[in-house]
Image (cartoon, helix red, strand yellow):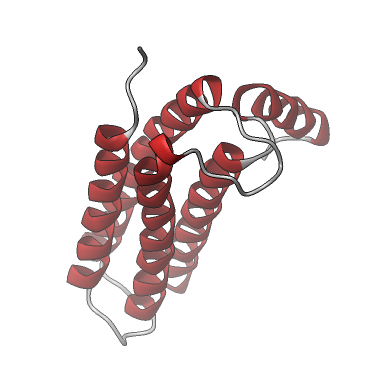
Length: 151
């Protein structure tokens, strides 16, 4: 776990790279949902009520989602550089599709965490977790495709 000074330095770097507006919020929503997913996976591991193969499946999905976090950050940083936004909610029209897909990716990742929690409680399936994770990755890829290219 990072100490307070490391968190402060990271926060300053985030402010510099992502700003304080639209693209920072898009990145942070994805990051929070990913953190929640890992909390559920850790609680599942501690509970010990799922098999090793199922736990490995959850970890594998989490690793793929964590890899996508770097792509989300890269995209948000590039969009902030080309289309900086203030603290308001104005979405530049040329970036609306990318913003929408980033929002959907974060929402779908939160649903992935919820599906993992339901699986841990025996109320859902590992397939459901996988489907949500795949949709999350599809939204990230679509956000990358729909982002305006530099002129």
